[in-house]
Image (tube, rainbow, N blue to C red):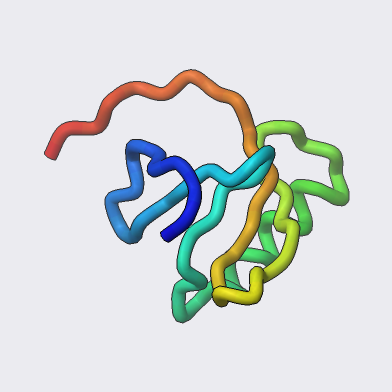
Length: 73
């Protein structure tokens, strides 16, 4: 996958490309876009903005800068 590999992609490979984060579109991608659209309409800055699906069938979301803690199993 083109781009810079990002840590934390426990379910699938997540990469950064420019100001976007991209991942293979999961089976229930449309379900997840619903809440993301709601957050965007209410201008909540803590959720990524859906930017579309690439020609390689990857979802593109706007990058959201945040601090995160490492998750351990």
